[in-house]
Length: 367
Image (cartoon, rainbow, N blue to C red; front, top):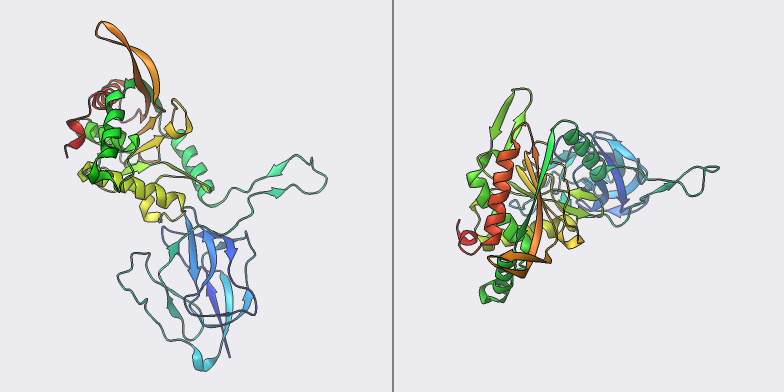
């Protein structure tokens, strides 16, 4: 009988520690190679860890909700000497997942299956204050995604000088186009929302205002203009706000953009966004419309120069030539890094976005 210990591996993105959010095995359980033993929460996502060993669980080295440092033991498995598995590769070598991890300190470590991201089954969200404290006070541990988001927002707010400009625009034509597209047979299997058209308008505007798709580099004292648009879409999830992005969004036609946004949001809400899916964003949209909010002063995603907040569409009376009409309007608010972009350029860029939404029919379809 050989006892092998599986230690917390670095699952990518420079992981240094992770929180145990679920155990799927207990002492005495028989497990197989690649069987999921626990879920860990990193700063980016929740990851399932598979066992590199087959055998009987001898010891769990960490408690639920405990934070474990990379390289520290997670689980020990008693492995019969004659059944210690040789190193194995996943059956599907083309599987789209994170890199293989060689783990274990026994005589025959194996290559664990590629890690997959999924939401945990359950997690204690709050811990009551010790006895004697006021009963109405609750302490909520800040870990994982929420902890990383908090640190990023503080870094952004106190590093980049923010400025936000607002504009209310007439989106009657855009919303009518949304309704027409939804009825089109070729769009029957696609989910079409106003967000897709706002994203398209932003991507078109960036051709004329590339400074919005840039980053300030403090050490070099230079502005770096990005060669492609990695469009971030802020998504609220049970574990906090995440901002996955669409790589090379400017190259997508409208149907492809709609599919990419829907896939991005669905994956984020399911808790399955991979760390690489949130890396290297260049500009972000946050959609407040579904919440019924008119506008906001959004904080920049660290390293980016612009974030566009999209408010709810509402009916309002507007002058149209020599008459007054009831139109559908939407408030857009654009926050910028004032080191990179000044108010005049940002105002012109926002006006360009509003103009496209006011008259979208030709511009929306052009790649």
